[in-house]
Amino acid sequence: MKNTTVTFKKAKAEKTKLTMLTAYDYSFAKLMDEAGVNSILVGDSLGMVCLGYEDTLPVTMEDMIHHTAAVTRGAKNALVVADMPFMSYQTSVYDAVMNAGRLIKEGHAQAVKLEGGFEVTAQIEAIVKASIPVVGHIGLTPQSVNAFGGFKVQGKSEEAAQRLLDEARAVEKAGAFAVVLECVPEKLAARISQEIPIPTIGIGAGAGCDGQVLVYQDMLGLFSDFTPKFVKKFANVGDVVKDAFEGYIKEVQEGTFPAPEHTFKMDDDVLDKLY
Ligand code: KIV
Image (cartoon, rainbow, N blue to C red):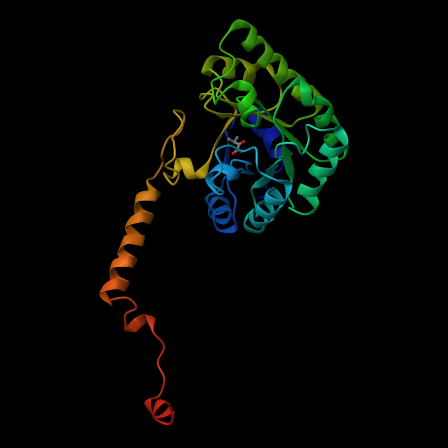
């Protein structure tokens, strides 16, 4: 069954947990879709885990469209949400609507996500008015890494916690159908989840959220530059992959790969006729 914004609404009403994972290509999107994840986020984290940048800021609309189109070809049932990259919506409401539209028209995403609270409510309203579902994203918003002075937990002081709660309400009021809470203390995330009528999707925000999202390279042990505290490695695929690469190198060097079963045959008399 295709997951839609209605699935998200129903999950909140029925208190069933929503699952979201990031993906950036066809093969992994297909695997996640077959596993039954509710939603796939084409995160601008692709800048770090796929393209090797230090942060998400260099990611372009062209990068996002290219990867979103690959993911949507692999995802039959998961709701595909595409991230709006840095400077694709902060500049104006017009830019926000046009770029959200490109992710839908050219990337075939079913929804978009953008970072920020009060400062982006006009953009959220306008995108929703254009019939494009929006996921909000508050707390640690990686596109603001320079303004925050690093990747830090948000909402710890009374003032910061109140601001986050108010921002969650504002994002919902602007029309978002879900909101990502990133690196928010567990109790605050649970309180926000109780207070707002749309599902909260947590990453580093504890089990009180209505759903969870993880970057797949993190949860599979495929990204070794750093591992945030909130990541659980559900498998050590990185080690398996490295072992396979080492095995391949060894067998090619020893001449044991390719073996007879990996090769194509032909009649010897054809060969004999060659001059
Ligand atoms: O870009 C991304 O992967 C994200 C998640 C961390 C929520 O925004």
